[in-house]
Each structure stands twice: as C-alpha cells, then as structure tokens.
Image 1: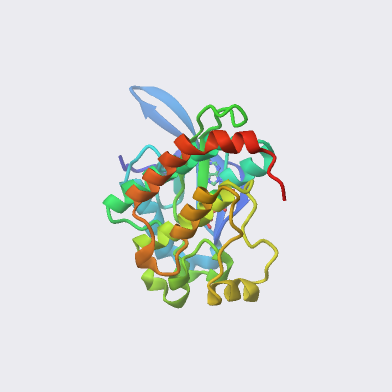
Image 2: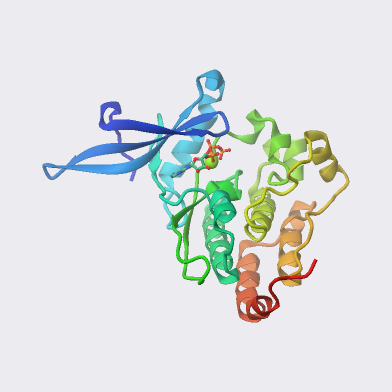
Amino acid sequence: QFHMIKYEDLRWCESLGQGSFTRIFKGSKIDIRDGERHVTDVLLKELDANHKNCWESFFEAASLMSQISHKHLLLVYGINVMVQEFVKCGALDLFLKREGSVSVSWKLDVAKQLASALNFLEEKNITHGNICAKNLLLAREGDASQGSSPFIKLSDPGINVAMLVVLDRIPWVAPEVLEAPERLELECDKWSFGATLWELFNGGQAPLQGLDLERKLQFYETYKQLPSSEWTELADLISQCMNYQPAFRPSCRSIIRQLNSLITSDYVILHAAEPLPD
Ligand code: ATP
Ligand code: MG
C-alpha cells in the first residue's frame, strides 16, 4: 500500500488550522496511472517548525498508519509530510456540535465502528494512544436525525503523549499514562474509548470543559468519573472503560457485545423518553 509521493505532485491549498504541534492543509495529489492524470483530494499534515524535536514521533505515527489497513482506519499515503485521505465531513466533535439532533442509533453505529477499529488494533497488539471524537473523521454522514448509517475513520495518533503537556489530554488519556508515559498500552485505548463514547452521547462537547489544568489533575487524583448518562447501561459501559485499574477494563469483545445489546434492548425506550428530564 505504501508508495512514494513526490513533493512536486502535491498541491497545497487552504489551511485548516493547527493540531498538536502540526499544521494542517487541504490539498491534492496528482498521480499518473495508465497514462492518465488523476487528482485526489488529500489532507496534508506537517510538523510545526517549532517542534522539529518531535520529528521521530511524528514519523512513527505516520508510518504506523501507512502500514495498517482497516475500513475504519484512516488511509495515510505518505509520511514525510503526512499525506492522508481527505475526509469530507470532517471531525466528529465538530459535526455533533453543528448538527443538533442526532439519533441514538446513529451514535451507536459510530460507537460500534470505533469498537471494531479498536478490536482490529488490539488483535495486532497496536496501541493507538490518541482516541477522541476530534480524531474520528466522518467519511459519510448518513442521515443523523433519521439514523441512516454514518461511516467513520479513526485518524492517526499524532505526536506521542510523552512529548506533550499531557494534562490537556485529561480525560482522554488514561490516568496511568500521566504517571508514566511509557505505560501507553492497549488498556489505555479502552479508557480513551470510554471518554470518546461520553463525547459522542453528549453532543460532542469536550468532557471537563472549563476546568483548568490543576482541576483536571485533581479529577484523576481523586478518582472521579465523568457525569453519568441517564441511560444506565451506557453509563455502565463508560465507567467500565474508564476504570482506574487498567486490568479491569473490558476487552474489545466485551465492549462490542455490550454495544450490541444496547441496540436491541434500550434505544427504543430511550427514544420514547426524549427529552430527558433534568
Ligand atoms: P492530534 O494529534 O492531537 O490529533 P492533529 O495534528 O491530528 O492533532 P487535529 O486537531 O486532530 O490535529 O485536526 C485538526 C482538524 O483538521 C480536525 O478538527 C479536522 O477538522 C481536520 N482534519 C484532520 N484530519 C482530517 C482529514 N483526514 N480530512 C479532513 N479533515 C481533517
Ligand atoms: Mg488528529
């Protein structure tokens, strides 16, 4: 899958802003196949000039993504500058904030797709390390209010947490990683999955928004949990994932099983109960 892209075959278009130590642009890449010129929209992510010291970590994220392939993982074509497939509908958190009404079955679809990507990574013994709603890209919106299926792709993990101010990443980063960044292991993604589920079911708002870094740290130090959903089975799944003991977090199989049973048992009831009282 991996192949060389020549710099002159890339076109740089508008800036899409900044990420963690990165600058992000929309662009296109030009291929000549069978004598024909093909233009593909791409997303170009380059390391910010002030953070050249993170080069190795950036390179690692890019090459990881270009070596594995799964329908719910973003395609990465090139790694010197990270050249990725351009995902039209953008990041999930922004979509949820924009969209207002999103059906429960739509959200469960997203959750199941993420769980399947996670399961794939777990089988390959790969830790992603940066799962959050902003890193879930919507390749297809579906009809969010009617519940017709979306299609998501998990983006690259970016710069390793060890290089960042990790407090920013609370509550997505697993608590054990704060103490020792080298403890970034499979279980950490389960914690992040829990926080991402929370975002998904809370309209894409960032959990713990408005808390300063010190308060965020206190959140972990006092073993707090995110405000729980009225939907007890969902709340239960989130709190299993966000268990402070990594070993007690559920396996991907168990996560998938629980998500499947959420669909069959509760979403009809939840629909009938909307809007939920305070
Ligand atoms: P991090 O490593 O923390 O995830 P990053 O460098 O990946 O940082 P993001 O904040 O994840 O940067 O991405 C910035 C924005 O760029 C996203 O909110 C999204 O709107 C857009 N974006 C990122 N990747 C793509 C893509 N492949 N296609 C379309 N838009 C994208
Ligand atoms: Mg990202």
